Each structure stands twice: as C-alpha cells, then as structure tokens.
Image (cartoon, rainbow, N blue to C red; front, top):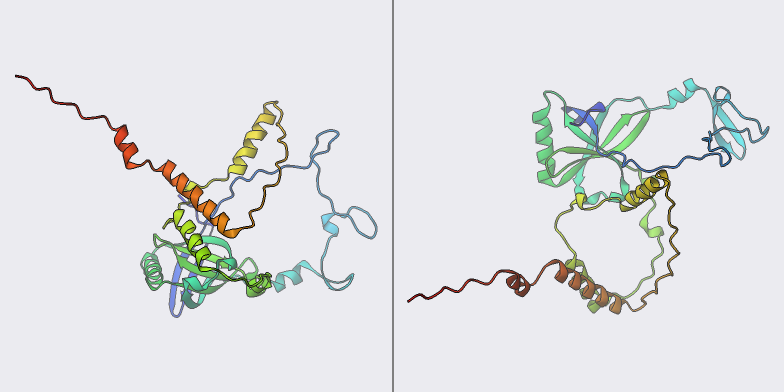
Length: 285
C-alpha cells in the first residue's frame, strides 16, 4: 500500500478537493561506485577549499552569495534567504484546462500521484472522470518547498490523478535550435517507412516488458568480483558500416521484421503438422 508523503488541496473556482500526495516513481536501486584511496582502500570524503587562500573551509564559515559581476558577489544571511523563498500554501491552484495533446512531453519533469483525502472521494472521482471524458488536463500553480511550481494534473487510464511537474518555458530550448536541412520526402520512401512502423506497432504500452538490462549485467559482474573472480575484458567492436541508401535500409529492415514475425508466429501448416494425426477407425466384420 502506498504511503502518503504530504497533503495538497486541488482548487479551481469555488471547488476545493483535499488530497494526499504520493510518489509516482521510485529509485531503481541504481548502482553507484565510491571513490577510494588506491593505497589503503579507504573511502574519500569531499572538502571545500578557498580558491584564494587554498585552505579547507568548514561549513560554519560558509555563506551563500550571488555573483552579479565577474568575481563580485553579494552575500545573504540564512534569514534573508528564507525571506526570498515562496510561502508554501500546499494548494494546487488550477488556472486553465487544455487538451492533453497540447502539452509537449518535453516539458515533463517529476510526477506524483494524487489521492483523495478522507471525505473528498466524490469530488475527486468527478474531476478525474470529467477530465478523462473531455480529453483535457489542468494546468496549475503549486507553491511548496520555498518554490512556485508549474504543474499539470491529468487522469490515468484507471481514473487516478497525476500531478506532473512541468518545466517553465525558459527551461526548455526550442526545437528550432536543432539544425535540420530541408529534404524531399519521396512517396515510396514514406510508404516503406509506414510499413516498417506497422510491422512492430502495438496499441498499448506495457512497461513490464522492458527492464534495465545494463543494470542487471553490471550487478552480475559486481557479484563476480565480490566472489573473487575477475571480469573478462571484451575487445572493442569494430564500427559498423553505415548504410547510405535509405530505400535499401528500409527494405532490409522490413524484411528482417517479417522474418522475426514468422519465427515468433508459426504458420498454419506448421501448426497442423504439430497436431497428432487422427486415428483411423478399424473396420470389423
């Protein structure tokens, strides 16, 4: 059972829906390595050095500053920094509803589940059903942890609500910055590409079909080292030759996809051959 990590109130117009906040993701137990002293194997610790004096500075002697010109800083006390923070309201203040497809996923940041607080189930379910039916999501402001966040509230397939933290416009680079030369898209190329897409297309996303294979491989090698075995160093692979002809590449990919599909799904003739032949009835006089 998920455990609540805080409370928030969804608000729009005169409607207020007390909700609980849940983490939508969890760390994949990522593998990390520590820095050790090569001589004795002891773990190293981080220290801060004064760039001018070259001495180690304790945390008690540190202050925060803002560089307003080259090597010129204005410093702030902890009380002043506290004053600069946004006052936390724990309110998800909805400002508008927009079509879900109009919010580019490039703006997506962290995600949290929202669940109804006690007594708010009816209003929560109504909002989730209304947004799912309309195909719209809610854009809102959310003040917490000293910051003001831009968030999107959207329904899931099973009509739970997700609070998707979004990046602000100045945090996302426009795609127009990516240089792409104009080229002609030929009709026959497009048809082949569409055929290739359809060969491996599915209507639903099943995340359980995917796993972090690299993490598993690294963990297996670490276990070998812990058991006193050495890791075999693989030779570097030669770079693969590039296929310049787009049409040939599409045809080759399409042919490979058809072969894989044929192996995965036996033909009717093969299935019939696998079935036992019916026994002949013996004729008795």
